[in-house]
Length: 394
Ligand SMILES: *Cc1c(COP(=O)(O)O)cnc(C)c1O
Image 1: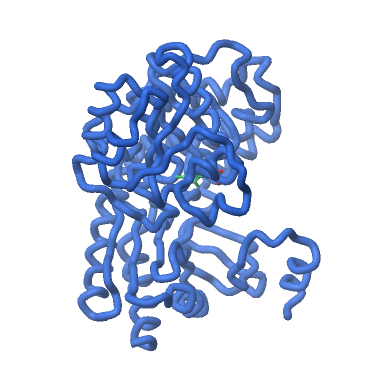
Image 2 (image 1 turned 135 degrees about the vertical axis):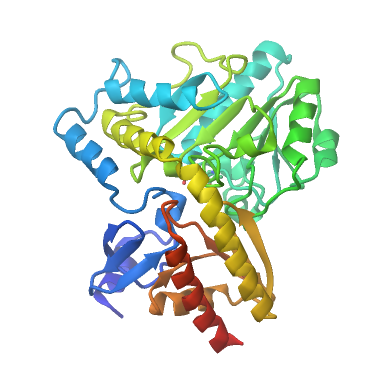
């Protein structure tokens, strides 16, 4: 056992099975371990480092802000928070923002907003419909919202007010809607659930149902937002305008930052209703602002769409070649490759040995969520490594 594995066993709560690599440095598409080995990174800090590791504009913003003002509290205005709020709202269909520190926290706030909306306009309706195989975070309420038993069974009794229905099934949502329903919360593409893409009219039909019933549509874009699927927000590809969008992961350019975006109709908080000590602090917002500004000014979502299609096509070539690959799925640079048996962990470890970092999203599926700045040549290199690994399995 290595020294760091010993330290983990001795000092940590057991929450994760780590890949046996200690990362010490990152730059662009690459990271290096403590022994100087280089890896091509298709995990990207878990769909976080959309501009790659230590992008100069993000680093510069953090360095400058760290000399200026780190934390001020929301009792006062700060410039980075104002700048980021304006940029987000001006580039989305929504009107108001709240900043927090993580995706789960953004979703918690969104549920509070929906419940308040229910109290004010829907006779006290409080229930939120979510879907099976969803993922909304690890707080107690978000484990209840998440439609996967492994995340909530150990923690019962759970907060009430969540109903789970099949994903990509509008009729199931209609059936589950009651006078108690105040909102529906969905991921435009399910990330942690295995990279599941619904049929093209799903969100449009759900949105239509929400409008008819006067219930709110909350899109959890913690994973799909900030360019990941080829548009700044995934909802843009569905021709709808949701009432609430939650953000996390890619928002902060690598530092912890979450956000809730709400339409004027859904923006029912009053002063004192919600808050966060660190949420929207100047350091996180300066990083987030530099990150988002660069993404917008350099058309990164459009690049993501193009290279995402190229990557998808190259993965389809692998599927042609290896009969044990069952499916390629996803959108933009949120893609998955599934196998006919649970070999994902084994494939991941072999890739790692050959200098490619990937994620095992299901026992039988790998997920790819590289930085959005990736080039076709880097995709080719990853495909070459995957091909070598799969050849050994086949
Ligand atoms: C990662 C994720 C979350 C949770 O975000 P944290 O920052 O880990 O709390 C919520 N929803 C979706 C869709 C996610 O992918």
